[in-house]
Image (cartoon, rainbow, N blue to C red; front, side, top):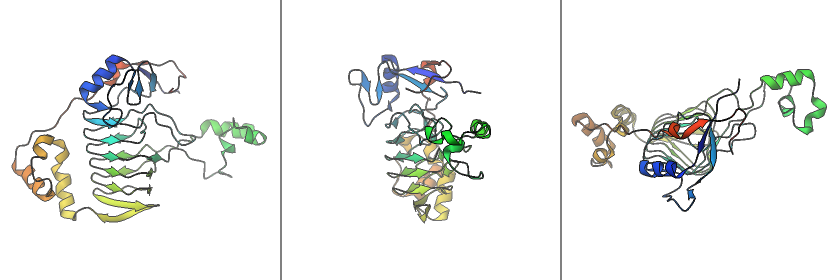
Length: 275
């Protein structure tokens, strides 16, 4: 059964709303004629769902997401928390927490081949490929209709205060814990614990940012849930002190509105793809 898709038409009204909301589709982008970052007036963008939670003071600088061959392209919008930005294109199902820094070149292993069949060859599911004409049988055709080249695992979950370096590759179905750092050019194939620094291929824990007791206190404090003016008026160079102050003070929760992309979306005709 095909998924419903929705179309967002880039209009002056949409861009004005984004500017007021402090959502940025490019580093410090300003409206320049018909363009605002990677958005252009009149462009029709197909999205899988209008239920994308974008908090204010966030930046998606990469534009349309182009997957690995066999994956699904996406609009360039995704759920992202305040004070986070990505220079990489992100797929819509990805959820990014607050205070995250994502460099260029992030890729997702969102395309796969069968591994329990006689062969891993794309001949079993790329039946439209002229290379495999000789391999086509009714059995192959039937299998190709069942096989999902994008796999069955969800896109990764990215916690709060995560720093992802250039050229990182993430496997599907994993979780990047709050406070984690992923070194440049790493391939991450398993969950990353909170406040771990990982690197390599496959990525391994290099060290922890803090001692276990401080990691526990930081996670318990949920400092990212409070008004940034109050949080960054504390001694942020001393994380333990911040945790203690949060326990002593009655800080103001930070509960911003979420950008309502749905008000600019309309259901797209069946079969329409992202331009």
